[in-house]
Length: 345
Image (cartoon, rainbow, N blue to C red):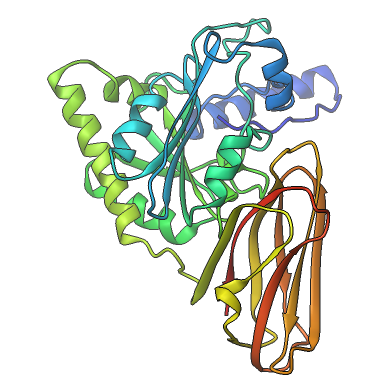
């Protein structure tokens, strides 16, 4: 579940009581009840310093060559039932990533597992790298609402989100647009860190998750139907709904490489490069430059991004005269790095 902190402003008591009552009446009748509590840990590094992998939590992955990944960053005892849904959707043919808590720690006394790191701060290196390689990213989360059976749809990939929503509705599940605090529209949300920087986030209420995880014939049938609808939506969606794209990537490079083995692209000033990059050691600085050369092997455009750890990039080719060009990716920092992205042209 993704939370955004809210600031409180003082007001006269009588007015505050009236306004609060009105807001609560509206809120509870329209959106799921969520806690505004802050995470105990700001990122994965902090969590890992206090908890033991393999004991307090597990990370499980499945890698496949297609362009799909199913994420479950709040699995196990964090958002109950999401692990089962992730595996049911992924089956044997889609990649998946699961972070699962084996313990429940609640120092805040608010029913929130301390091993919860919100989607915009979740930066476990394996999760980031696996996600960066895929065009279709679907992140499974749990929302509050024990008496409600609703799927709240969010994320920046509106093309795939709409198709999955339709498939779920056709299968008989109640689907609604996610409220702002569950919308998954932040570019920092891990669901939006695939090659296209656009993913889909499903927030599933506790009531529906309880149905889907029930170890009964009906529960298994409902889970199969639910997962099948999501899989059908993924399959029906396009990897590149915004047009033609050349996907590129390297899992580990220290110098440089040519896109498309140095073959030319026909480019215009409206084209762009987009994706995710990171040093293999996320504590190091990564500086990667894109060099655009014309048919005379003359450097005509250079675009660079630098950051400590992983970062997303979008380089427009504005100012480039329409024509044929080659593009080279250069590791300026020299620190072993990975990069995954697409040339939209």
